[in-house]
Length: 107
Image (cartoon, rainbow, N blue to C red; front, top):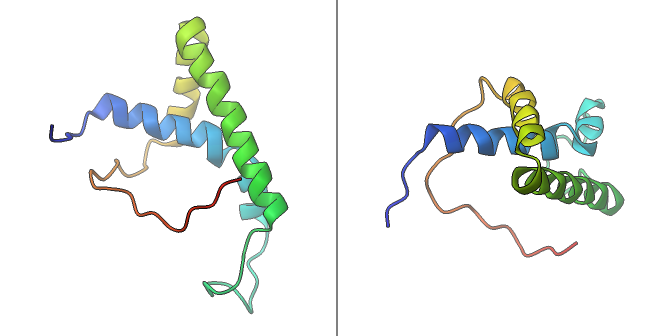
């Protein structure tokens, strides 16, 4: 079956990403000043293992809470989606191609 763009589903996906990632620990890392020496150098790690673990843990915790709300408290879920959608009004829609996979990191 060929995947097509569903605007409502795209909006929901962007809202979930905003709630699970953008508004999590990654925002604190992003808020800092860029390193003038290593900025843009792909050979230099820009996020420590501890920071990456915190980002992933926060995202899993948030997505679990949101998915639980979707199934058990739809009113709260929809309120959270409305909040997430406010952050993503000008975000690009998803591209309908296979995602790039970089290494297999399991944390």
